[in-house]
Image (spheres, helix red, strand yellow):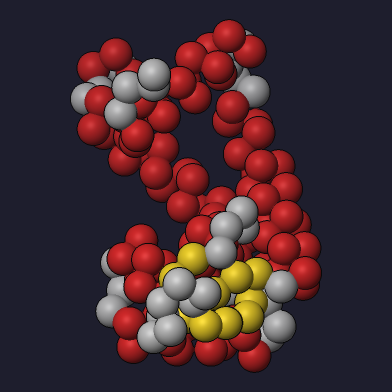
Length: 140
């Protein structure tokens, strides 16, 4: 089938397979599941409540607790009481967790670069803007 005949949904699905493949490979090389990789990515640049992380990952709190516990036992993240809600708990990456998140980001970028290098620099910028618009809505 010619790319021009392929539906946008099909192209997005094929793109997803490539991206998820790169994510899964990088995670496995570090002994992580794809969900653990997602947890690190969510916390890479923020401290978040357990409930916010559970909602973002689409997990129930008991499942997230086990996921957090495993990452904490590896020294990748820590938990502390929420400063504004005495009942809430925040999670955040440790220095070791940040280092791993950066290594994973570099590895994933390296794996995806050959696909992205097929586009000119202006087309890469356009694709980034379009994907951000699809995911986040129109930019202001």
